[in-house]
Length: 232
Image 1 (cartoon, rainbow, N blue to C red):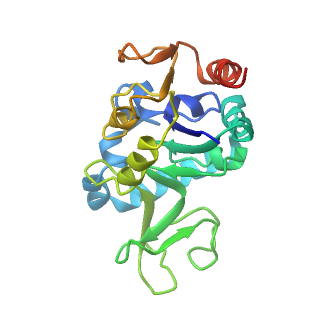
Image 2: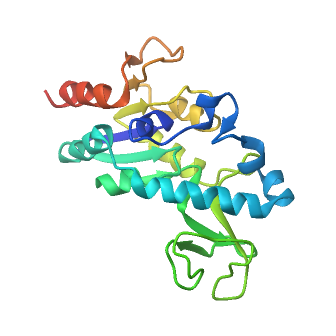
């Protein structure tokens, strides 16, 4: 089977009702993103960070994978599919995708403040008696405080190198629902081999090299067209 590597951004989850801060001029649910999505913001006000992500988790449980997420699963019948996502939601996994690499962390997980390798999936009885909610008082089994398992602004992206390796092995490389302005994720396009077929799905596509096949449609429509093109 050929390797199909798919890089997804906020646009693929927008049709499931997941809001993005970039749609609101630097605000995310009426908060300055640097207050709720930065390392400095966490140091200044960890209580706000916990409350903010508690609410995001509750919203995520109400959202459902859309036709674009499900379409990528269908492509696993024809390709060895790896999804690299900038999104922190779990909609790819809930749709049934087998191989998902999260660049910016995972909303439904938290990790130890002292030992980053200790990552816990919510809900977890060891962490909280409130299901998906955490606070500055929440501790793990070792007595350590926890924080969202999210890559905040100002922090390294530990999964970028594994993502680059996947992109470099692609026979087909697809970008979906991103402005190609968020780095280092936007740089993945450069790692696709020169021999690879490259597609870009977005209703407002950014400027890309001439060899990239642009599908200027929202994710659900674009993925449907992509499936037809790749499987005919």
